[in-house]
Image (cartoon, rainbow, N blue to C red; front, side, top):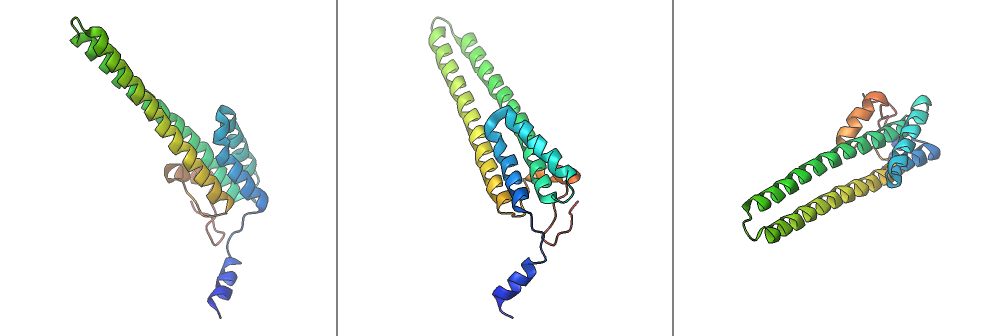
Length: 169
């Protein structure tokens, strides 16, 4: 038996998501690009696919998308708090250290604080969108794909079928 024929035979035994299921899973990951409405789209798709027991791959991927978006919202909030604390600390130090040249020191500290804030938010946003695109492509290709923490949490509600069609917990 040739390697190619054997691979085709094995692939017949794998779980195969339908085209609709893969498309909905992809849309759930790409929903991040429409801000708050996108989160609601992902939640709606997760509920829809989870209630349809014959689409476990799509339900798992939609669940990952929802949890990933929640985790990134929390991470963004934490980054904002840290950067704001840094910026206010820099402003306070510059203001307290100033004697007659306080305006220059305060202006420099303010500029640095704003730059750190903007760059931090840009990095988090870029990483979030890049990973969402990666997740969308992998889910559309029906690849077994788990976002590290989001996949674990989503799997507790909507287990992803493994390559043999069995459910993982």
